[in-house]
Image 1: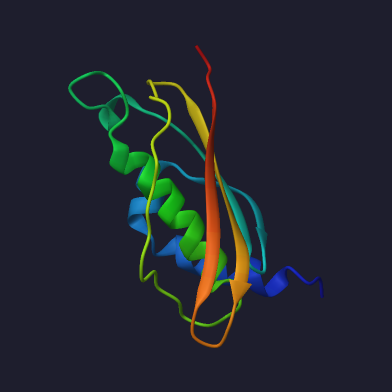
Image 2: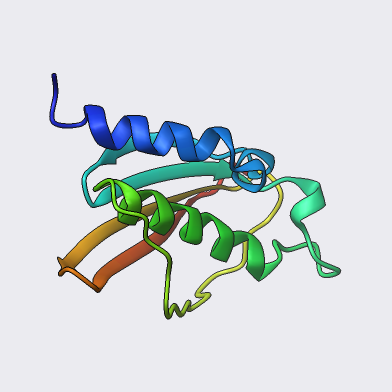
Length: 122
């Protein structure tokens, strides 16, 4: 049994019932204890009135990465406080990747850093 068997099973079970992450079109690239890497493509229905991705789309990808990473230990976890900085705009067809990594974990609080990066297709 590999070290990643439990985290992969947990994230698969979560994803199978996570209709919003499925709607986003999230691909799981890497799942380990305390770490998750996800990727998705920005679609037309995700754009706002300025033809750029709604900020909630980026936030949602980051939130899914956080949920999968923090629950990968087999303990139910929810976020208490989050923040996001939008440093560039996203267009239809852009591919974004979220990497969530555990910085510290105690019996009550975990701290995670999530970075969303862009691979522009156009």
